[in-house]
Image (cartoon, rainbow, N blue to C red; front, side):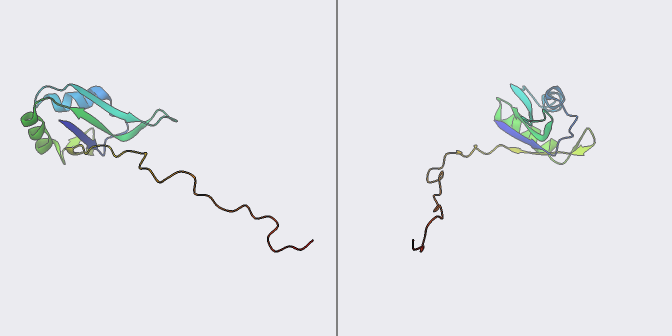
Length: 103
């Protein structure tokens, strides 16, 4: 199960996240999401746990608990929405110019 973890301290590292969730079972991956421009934490991350029962217990036990001085939010991650939802892109728009001008 993929778990979303929010309201993380900007000092939280992948290993800190892993340690917190390993208390409830096997953790496949843990990652704190970094801003591409500044390389600083964005304050949230994801933990992957292969056992559904352990993952649900971890969510139940850790949601609202303190991790490095912050009350974290833990929930089952929702599938990422596609950024290419169609219908987007160029919106057009006229270019001004010589409208209603007589030469």
